[in-house]
Image 1 (cartoon, helix red, strand yellow):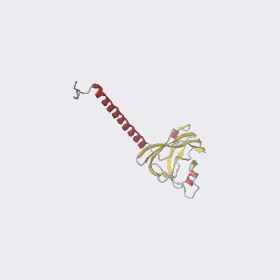
Image 2 (spheres, one colour):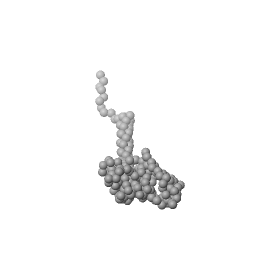
Image 3 (cartoon, one colour):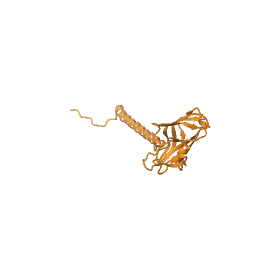
Image 4 (cartoon, one colour):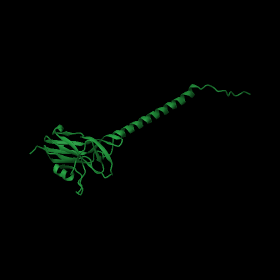
Length: 196
């Protein structure tokens, strides 16, 4: 009879390669998962979403006149409650016009609609209508806004005749730990005639 050799033998190259490869694959998968998580958190952190996103509507007017201010709604109160955000600023998105965009001024206001008035959000209106719907507008740059009850409105004062077109606004604001810009609003088109 032959005795069975039960002494430990050294691992062969085949035995050591497999666990090392598995460890590398597992470590690579773990690193990839951590990087994906960091990217997702970074994206969410820099892209707040307190307002409705851009698109789905548009406003226009053929009654704009050089030197006279027109008011256009940027956001609309949604009644979602009392969410409050800190507005830093806004810029028109994709301005293209024959009136030379540098010729128009853009100022931003928060509007709390007049109590008791028949509520209709501001689309595009002249100054008299704006003052009737929004008695005490507040400058919106570096301001706190109630998302559910206030409307962000832009005052556009053209200085040259032509057509002013843009596609919403890049709204820069903070909402809790989120701080960045969101593309909001709709398409805006103003046909600007020369002054009287």
